[in-house]
Length: 461
Image 1 (cartoon, rainbow, N blue to C red):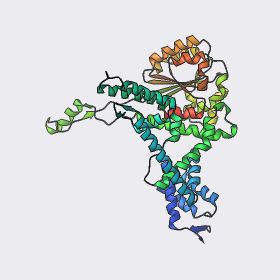
Image 2: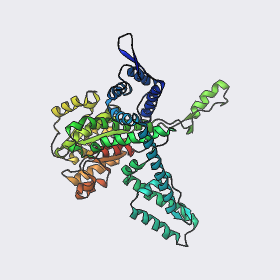
Image 3: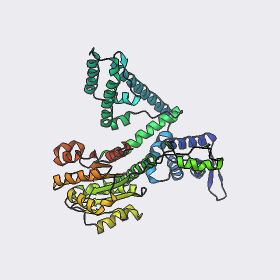
Image 4: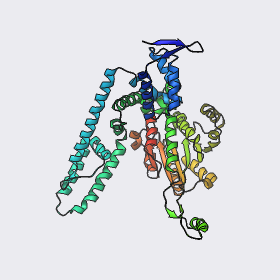
């Protein structure tokens, strides 16, 4: 039963039992586990908001919590999944825990079977849990080939035990290859680490599955076929991807605190106060430079449907990374960095680009674009530059384009090509084969592909 009284404003205030406060605290903890920045102040706001709504009205409670616990629309997808999974019946909560326990048992069984399959000279090959899971997910034919390889070497009497480390290196190399091939499947079957609270862990698993189900259609659809009604959700997903990439760049290229080398000059200077005795040693470490990104986006006729999504991705990176140069090209090259650096709304930025640019919807000449890039902006390109090209590879003057790309590669740190052609169609295009010999090429015709570009850590350390 629920009692209501009026506060000083005349509105009804709910006095709910302590167990409900406990539920809100646990619900907030679950949101934090999913990466949302929910702190004590947000929890207090949520508790105060719940005193102003009808607690038996589920939708009112959800709106109150969403208004007080979320910081942006991009977090709404996570919130919806967590809310639906947390505020449910005790019977379903128990079922969630049983299902998680079953998944953990299946996971451990796969680890054990993988360890038993891969043996050399009567001893198990030393593999990490991740490597064992990769092996378990491989096609049966490939697993049998790996077992046959080990058995063949095991039967060779001329091989000594010292050969074992080399053999393990070969096996691990093959498993790394299959990790890249099975990345999405492995993500689906992985077990999230325990938080120490079995009930919250089980609810988190269900919430993650529901959230993925709601966005899987948009993630896996070809970007040119995403419906207009799904554009806001697609934009939210892209914003999340760009935040992940920017955050990872900031972490990976921060100056390290590890002591690498004695700073003799600073040590001598500091010893003056002690009469020349070096009581305190000073060290210096190498400051790592953040990479400078250079983005080339194809906006020719064959790419026009992908352009909005790709430019949203570029726009998000530009909003957080200062040293970034952005260009679009079709039959010529045009610099668009100034448009992004003026901090306008993305829609307004796109309207200005469409009105003022002459590149949209033309033919593609990568050779001309790269030649102009090198000649006009060559002084801005150096060994710390990472070039990201977004294109379907279809261009006139193919061999000249390959030649120009090789010249560019000699001047920069790395070239990454995001190909909007479906990966299964790559063999049908001579342009794909020609450019793949020069650059690192990744598929990028769906938002799922774009997400994996971020999560696979394509940027070198």
